[in-house]
Image 1: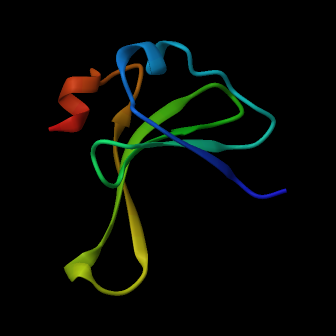
Image 2: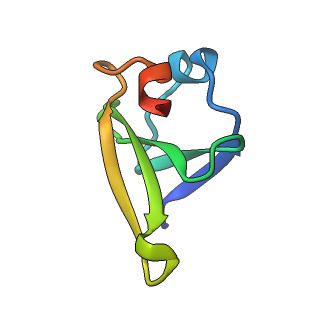
Length: 77
C-alpha cells in the first residue's frame, strides 16, 4: 500500500490531533498551496512544503522543521 494523504485546513487543533498510522501519511493544507505535514509511523511529524523549482520539472519537498519544535504560525511563514 502506498502513502496516503488527506486535504484539510491545517490548524493547531489538526496538529494536536495527529496520530501515527502503520505507514507514513500526509496532511495537505487547503489554504496554503504546497504546505503539508508528514506523519511517520513512529509518531514524529514534520512540516514541509512541496514545489516545482522554477515552476517546472518534478515536485521537490523541503523540510521546514519538526512539529514538536516549530510553532504552526512560524512554519507557515
